[in-house]
Length: 383
Image (cartoon, rainbow, N blue to C red; front, side, top):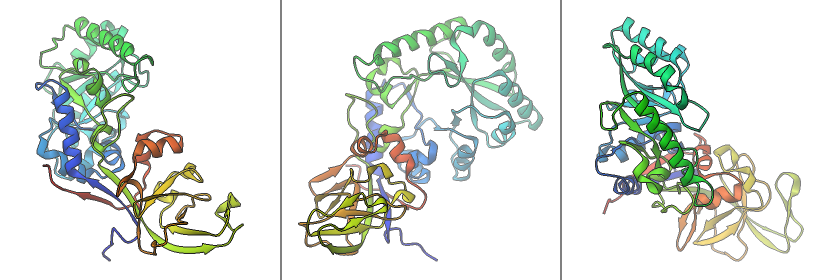
């Protein structure tokens, strides 16, 4: 049975806006810096196939993912460029990584030993990028222990089976503004990383690629990103950090009006009856809820757009339905389209606004939308 993506609720992503946001990152860094777009978590929840199609014309050096399974998905979609798996990989998945010709981020010698054994057994060479922990603390080999682990990494990558292709770290506060320790911490982490490169006798311009920065780093300190930049949230229309340039909005979340009701004063709505009509009101039930990834924390706080006007959410958001107060907007009818994220006429709800009202971050809003919402990628015009 053919599914109508616009029947109930859906996500729209403008591919042209995503491409222009990538160009903004390219313009921010040196022309010699290669670009490695991050498409982990199903391209930040927006649909990896659409992201590949939108970004491929820009000719990225490769693609960044978080898991072996995500890398395998890219290969199944026909991706031939390098695919770098950045999150630590259990040694049991080394064989699958070799078979899929994935590039693994290495945070421990145990994985590297297993990876080399699997590559040799299958006679399939692999590439690795060594992660250095300069302060993030969640993964990577310790920056102040390079003299101990460096020789072993060199030994395990000294033949044809494992090629040491990259060395990277990750800034923990690149998204923070002035006064929050961000820029100072970035300099400190970059200095630690350079010290590791020197202790390992690795040239900044040599065959092993150094890379340090994501979207926020590229926009805040392009001089520190290294020879590869790893943009993510900025591509998809989310602001990468405080005081940083806003990307072009690329995402909209829409839902149909399923029901319109006239209610008398005192009528309650939703689980727990947390909202009571203050007088005669008109309510619209939208065909979207927390089962679609709309944060339940927006209950009695969030808003939607209908006919170009902002309308408040009333009552608790249900798994499948959300009610908004449309009193004063008489033209609303079942089948009309409400906007939960994006623009309608002169009004706009940004992902940052939604995240603030929900008490979270824009990353979690994007990645929280469930598979029940069809992702509709709109190619658009790059002009």
